[in-house]
Length: 170
Image (tube, rainbow, N blue to C red):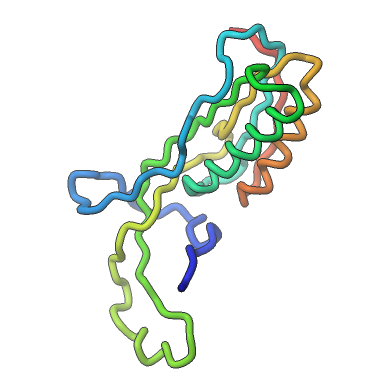
């Protein structure tokens, strides 16, 4: 059974973003469970931001993997309710793919349409240069844990990004 294609297949942003839901028969669900995690009304000192350095697509399953990684690491090290995590981009773009076979003899089957339209399979967020992908609010004593969590989450991302730390002010 073939698995999902890697995210590197979808890094390039198409000319026309495919978001019009009324024209699509079966729309895949976004994999993101929660956009905001943690206690929002705490007194925090710093924001740790993951900022994009590319104009690209980020799959919703990559965003969810980042959220799970950060949430698990921070819950183990600083405790539940001691931080706030927010995912900023929303995956509106619908990824279409043309199914293909990857086994011996499949070249005789796969000669079909050259620019086939494809079926909706996944969702992605369009991210520009300088866009904030994830922000983490923490206290000063927990700043090094938040930096480590952001570094671990960037491995799930697969694009060029940087970590910014700024003092918290509402």
